[in-house]
Image (tube, rainbow, N blue to C red; front, side, top):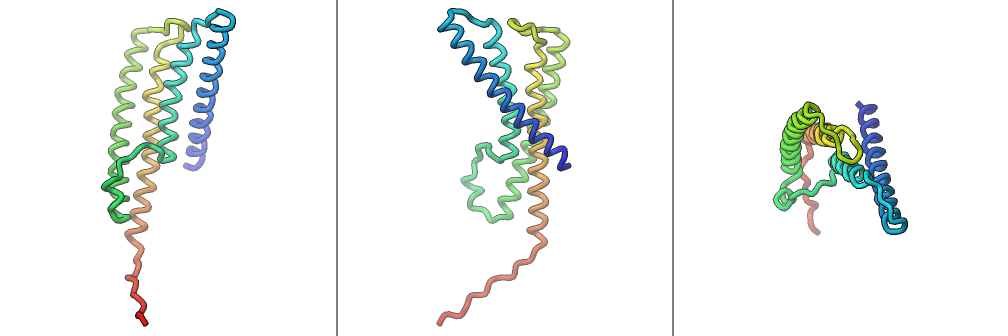
Length: 173
């Protein structure tokens, strides 16, 4: 499991960094060519757009791994630790179901695009390649939410089986 996690970490980070750097360089090149040389690349905006889409879906997985998604914790902040863990497990389960739905619906969209045989206008790339970002990104997020759920479950179980005696107050002098 550690090897798979290690591979996923590197895949997410390198794919994210590559897409972000390549997109930035491509947009910079396009601006320089357009305003300095009065020349424009016909395909650069399309490639940049699709790289950003891939970056967003892979970045979502990284955000799940780092627990960096925005959360509403106004109520949960006042709960005891066990209550926080229960709510975290419920949130992870809801997220797992949502990711499974994204994978299912994204796969249906991709198969429809493959059947239609459509290609992108500027590069002629098969249109299913940009659409694959949805099921692949959701699959990566699903794996990360499963990992978080297992961590929360193990933490909940270990906290439930440890006994902490009540603290006695020291006599006041």
